[in-house]
Length: 410
Ligand code: ZN
Ligand code: ZN
Image (cartoon, rainbow, N blue to C red):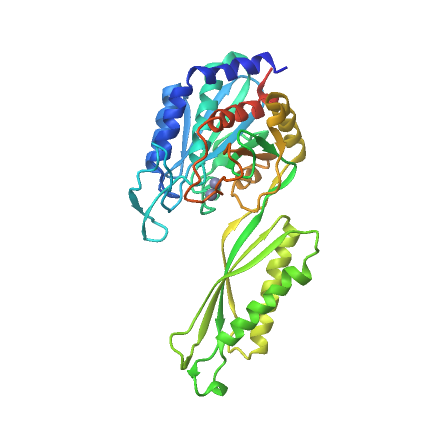
């Protein structure tokens, strides 16, 4: 049996389903790139004002935070990410993205844009939950903070909101909630998990400094191609031989660039590496091993100067705090019954945890099944990743309210 006051809030979703679906379609058809979510954030602000939200903060150019203060009680924050991806969509829905191109400020390239990660659901669900809570103020008390976060896809938006002073400008939440549409869960399911849910990730650009020469005079060179090949082979031993079999780790060399012509030994080579891990110790071990192997291989090859390492696209580990997660899990179990499931760790990565970590607030991040046909469901970032409109939208909206209920209901 659900809580009667919770039922009152959730009943709001029955009254405006058509409007919420139209709003979702609007966001789906008007995707915008990371840190360029200008129309998206303007529409979010316009919607919030139309619901009667009085306190709205702008953080950075495209971050929007709504605060609903409703008397005594805990502060609960919920986050929806708002950016889309530089890619074309492949979908036969009548609300498919228009395919209009944008210039990506990050790369200078013109590109089509699509919501192929489902952030349009996250926006619309958070707006719907905010509206329902606002319309039924008598059913709860406390403060609800809706964080519409830009630039998740480039791991920049959460950090930007921290730099823009979210911790100083807004009250400290008791819990920070978030969700993501996934194809790895059955359609309509809500998947929760205590502990690590999304991996830590890093990209590392490595520049190897050799010594150039004519291809016919290799003895006068330090060949960065031979060196790079040796490094790439040796790096394969890190996960295989240094990480315990029970741990999960990935070390991929995704790019190796050197040279221009068959008879020129080049001066430099550049490698791009990507790492994933589900705990901080394993991530630290990977990075230590990478640097140790590369520095020593360069030494062994007589490099005239040491290699350079540039870390970028750094995503922290998303590790759900136990008490908050169990509280959410109990509420979700009660409301969604058999559709409340255990979430397996997802080998993708998120910047979600940066804001709660800056506040010193426990957080929990759950998955939302997006496809009735789970067997044939495309993965996130696939051009075909367009989750079923329903029940995904209703479930995502209800899940936010249900998850906040243990803190907000009287
Ligand atoms: Zn994504
Ligand atoms: Zn995403």
